[in-house]
Image (cartoon, rainbow, N blue to C red; front, side):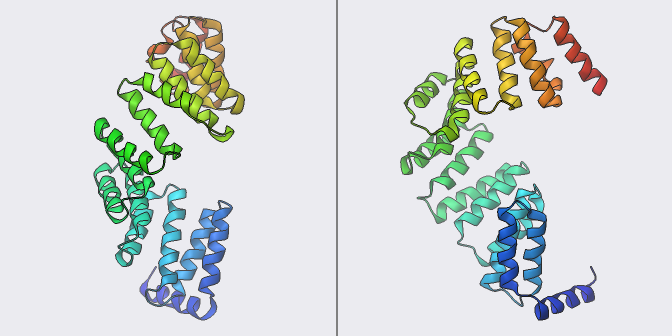
Amino acid sequence: MGKWKEHLQRTRAFLTNDSEGAVLEGLGLGFTDDYEQAIECFDQALYGILGTTERSLNAYFYKACALSELDRHGEAIDVYKKYLKHKKDDASAWNNLGYEYFEIENYNEAKKCFEHAIKLDPEEPIFLSSKAEILFELKENKKAIDVVDKALKLDSNYTDALFLKCDILIEMNRSEEVIKILNDLEYDEDIVTDVKELESIAYHELSNYNKALECVNEALKFEPNDETFWYNKACYLSLLDRQEEANDALLIATSIEPENINEIENDEDFKNVKNTERFQKLLNQSVLRL
């Protein structure tokens, strides 16, 4: 957009627009997941505000959040930077910026942002959990465990941090500890699938495939159309040498998410079914898709 057009648009917005109303409308649209329209409202508000005000900074923050929801992480980074230029002490915004860098796999910048958020607010478990997650991604598992334990010390009921700890322990071949943690956990129905998925993976790592299958079947009762659960179920059935059932589960998994077909050829869990006719037919579908 040319400078003169931008100036006209800003002038028109200033004369005709209720910037506070535009921000509120954008928030309402965000609550209904209409992020594209929400961004338009925040832009409209920004055009109608001269200079840097609390309202314009709010519009920047909410716009960045909406861009993130649309997976437009590069744009979200730019907007968060504009916001943080004036709100340097907003720890939540630094944490959000770190998340955007995480999503584009710029892990070093993400780590810096999470550490800065912790520096600003060392008692917030969310920021500690964010740092632990980036350390886990960087394969610094021992450091990740130490940091996530700090988060859980601040809030023992923070399930996201607890699940992250379980993921790290599994990666460290400490699945027995994961089983104990999850067995001792009191949880509501809304996270039962997360618990059962982690349990199934831990039992898989311990080569207890019957228990792994039992857990994934529990998860499927709550989310019967989850392709990951069906894929994992196929793995466990294959490892138990229940070939027909494994192929049945794999057919469902690949029907829900056809991209799974590209994963099965080199998955060692399917060694007991890879020579069956039904499995080979699925592989042929992968070749045809190419």
